[in-house]
Amino acid sequence: MTTVDASPATGAALPFPPGFRWGTATAAYQIEGAAALDGRTPSIWDTFSSTPGKVLGGDTGDTAADHYYRMAEDVGLMKRLGVSDYRFSVAWPRVQPTGRGPALSRGLDFYRRLVDALLEAGIRPVATLYHWDLPQELEDRGGWPRRETAERFAEYAGLVAGALGDRVGSWTTLNEPWCSAFLGYASGVHAPGRTEPEAALRAAHHLNLAHGLGVRALRAALPPSAEVSLTLNLHVVRPLTDSAADADAARRIDAVGNRIFLDPVFRGRLPEDLIRDTAALTDWSFVRDGDLAAACEPIDWLGLNYYAPTVVAAAGSQAPAAEPSPSPWPGAGGLVRFPPPPGPRTAMDWPVDAGGLYELLTRLRDELPGVPLLVTENGAAYEDHPGPGGEVRDPERIAYLREHLAAVHRAIRDGADVRGYFLWSLLDNFEWAYGYSKRFGIVHVDFATQLRTPKDSARWYAEVIARGGLAP
Ligand code: IFM
Image 1: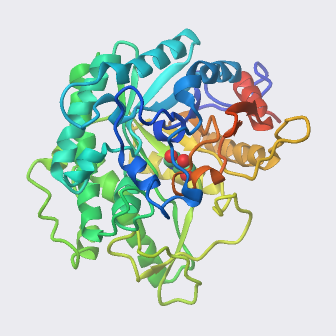
Image 2 (image 1 turned 180 degrees about the horizontal axis):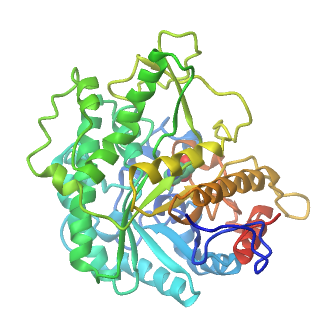
């Protein structure tokens, strides 16, 4: 068990282990802008966001937080925060505009400059290869439900690693494949906006395959010291009551929300109950011999993105339904309800429940012994407004972060091998279907002027990092 007792050396009441990685996280489409520059072609999110009615307010990522031009300023902000790590994503359509063929040097140049600036600032780059911006051309050929997309991803992974592998030692294949598969192809609230449950299951499988093939391509291109990982948004599923029916609802959501990725990636198999639950939709014959072994390439750590737990009940019970329609849960839609839990909520209407993060980390401690964990995203959106002097007071975010970091600390104390924490997000940004209406940043962005203003939470996080833990 890791010792994380009070530390007189740092003055932290809840000190984190030495070498703990303190970071911030962002994603390309959410901050970069410059959507049509230097050879970048449209991704599925460019197409989706420019389709009327898909994104709140008709917002797009065309300019976003203008990070493509303000990268040096943003690295400077992180240097002042004192972060040890920065998790960013590479835009596939910037590097390989058609999703096939050679890399575009002009596109790679931006990431070369970014990585150089990070290293110069003493910040370790953590590169994610896919954070939802599939080149539109690959979607036009079938997207993630098509096997070829997984093969194309591995080729792209190899190209980026070949270009940046001398400077980037920490790599993640995919961010939150559950969202790519089920929000993109089942509920359709994310790009490409398709509502085809069977295609969503195919997409999930091909994302697992893409991950495994991507790991192989990365290992082939990178020095042995490089770390390769995957980031999942696993669902902390809580049955509403202890009835057998609600327990079965939780099992279904755990299967199609969590084990659909965990089992192939860490055990080389598909959950049997998932196959049963989805039998009316597919016979899974798109899974070819060798696919599950390919998905199960060993990785160096698992990244976890946590925001809130998911409360579920059997559809027959009395709980109020809050399920989006069409359902993002193939095999569970209509059978499971999602009653809103009581208690405080963020601007996303997500419950604030740090206990869920502790549950998640200790579940994985038990289920995946020997696999180091990193919290690759955690944070909250609130209604932030600059005060008269320009200052942005965000006490609710600070409270949220403090509670969640305390939960991470507790999980480490109880034996979870958590190596780092990446706050989502460095900057206010394009929050997908919500456009710019939701602010997750610890740095406020005025999207009219692109002025950056660190919020109180940024100063608070800098103190936590400097202290190596939470204050008394
Ligand atoms: O903004 C997103 C991010 O892109 C992926 N994880 C969840 C965040 C908040 O919704």
